[in-house]
Image (tube, rainbow, N blue to C red):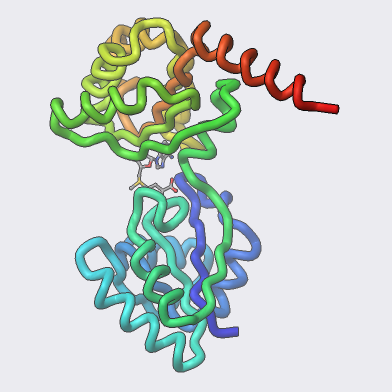
Length: 247
Ligand code: SAM
């Protein structure tokens, strides 16, 4: 059926594509993508060749109109980004918004996303997590963003580029303090995958010890804010009130 298929692609290991994604790519009339070169290489790897529609950060609105036209004409369009799940720190959301606004069908095809992949191997036991994506690159704005996150009782998940990793971890240390655990998940699903967990206070030195530890793509996870006595007292008070009300 005609629909926009929001299709997750691997974040490194080509085997991490799903069978359903391969099937949809095979039957799609067109593939909307962030970078046509990147996506044609990806398709080649699976023995496919498709008509590509560029839908990147700078032309997403126009691309959305073209995609809506194709869907109205009864086509199946797959939407991919360069890696992982479209619309997660990647283009895609505007296209999906336009397709929904036009009353047309959107079908998600789940697959890899660096955030969830890293979280699953982090061993952080917070019940909740907050996806913070990329921090601002300017120091002042980054600090403000970190301060806002510092009180959250949820594991914090960040994306970071290699050239900023040391600086970012240092900024996190300044704001969150040395005790919280941090997980540095690098090059997930790739040849040089490494997932290192330590106290935030130890992280900058660990990164600086070996330049290879700063290479590649990173997900940084930080344990959530610890429960304070005040919170527990509040919780107990609420519990007492609730128990009194119960039959
Ligand atoms: N849409 C993607 C997803 O679902 O994960 C994210 C795209 S975002 C532009 C790219 C960032 O994701 C990188 O800078 C890095 O922080 C993270 N990332 C992507 N692939 C990764 C990998 N294999 N290992 C670690 N981090 C990765």
